[in-house]
Length: 286
Image (cartoon, rainbow, N blue to C red; front, side):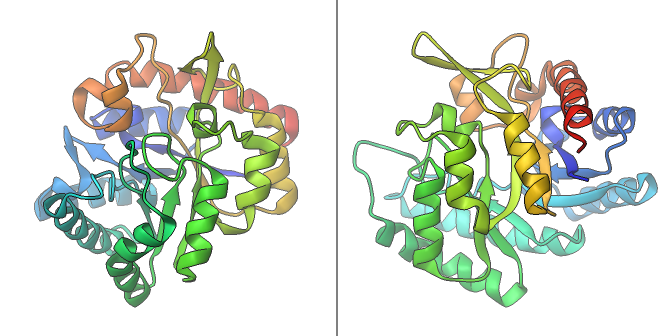
């Protein structure tokens, strides 16, 4: 059976609301991004301990830390140094919450495209920390950063050549990315041997514009993808990253998800997506 989780702020900034919706669908895992209107790494130790106690009481597992590491400008040393510190804090939090997966990106996309070698070099400090602590860096294919699809992320992973650098596979992000990679079966076939974590959402291209839509109504062949995950024995988590809202989110919020403005309308939209997901899983026996 596939293991489904949720990203906290896709539902609400109030962890009680997150857990309420999880219980409705029998879910037991969360991916931590922002809570109480702050990014998880911005919470103080007292708040972190409070959150841990809530999860313990509700039997909730943390499946990943959804950090924003290297959603930054590649040529800005101040930003780079800040993100190295964010990664180090996320390592500490991964110990507290007993997870071994921390998400990372590949720097904002711009007119000047860096080489894989340049990105590899900048990754070395966090790779060293990850290896020392036996934590996985899960590199996400993301349309706002340089490595937008499975093929590019695979190239980085193979170039770094560390057992602790893997992929966070997000099929719907392929609908947004500029090189027209087909998420399933193409993208999945490229990246499947490196996946340690996944995100689940849907998107649809309408008149050359891509929009987030409720799960099951977009251009991702999710039935095919989920069936194949079952066939391949995928044993990682898949986190709902809704992104869809009745009132669409701005591009800036989609690229930098966090806080109350981002979470507004997330409960209802996530409820809709989880309802559709349940129907799909029942149909395919997942």
